[in-house]
Image (spheres, rainbow, N blue to C red):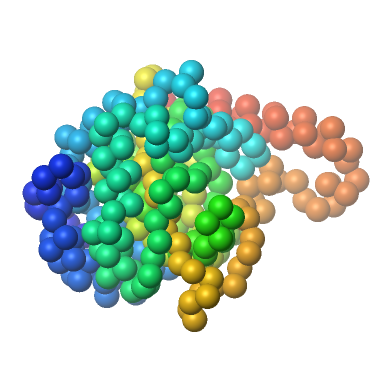
Length: 282
């Protein structure tokens, strides 16, 4: 479900509209959210202050800053910065807005999930920076937040990419199952927000980024949880689950009979290929 660009003014001192305006957007989109395929989700354009989001993008901390985590595996190559204490002023405002009572109430109305709890620590969230050749294979997110002992229920992704082109790759893919076909493909453009219910939600951007020099795929994310004691709480207790198709194409037979050092070498070659492929696509 994609809503038209909104025309709401942001509340004083905030990047988001007033509570009344947020609730109006949620009320108008709730039915479409619930019926969206392949699972409940919404794509909402123009909800935030565009100028402020441009500032959030320019405040991206340098790679030398403390707080960056690089994920360089067979299934992903991305950089994550989830330390709110080191954010610039606009990124901190965005984080505070996403964790606010007003925004949580908006999400509850939109998703139909009551008693949502934000994560003030932004564990594994915050800035996502994916540079040329980077990718994130289709996966299902971790089901529980071990620090908070809560069940993960909703993801919010806010894109920061002005003028992003489809042939630069990095489109968010929503799939009905880990190894299923693409049901929705979403361009990660500036001031586009994607909200989706996470239990079992297969998603990713497996096509390597092929952006021009000096550009990368930027996203600001936040996750929301509920108590495991709620009657509708999912029972899953797994970590991140990746598609088998992303496991370097190595079958179970190969993994049983090929020495681990050889498999690791093959994976490294595959990663280099994906990155070079991203470069060639530019």
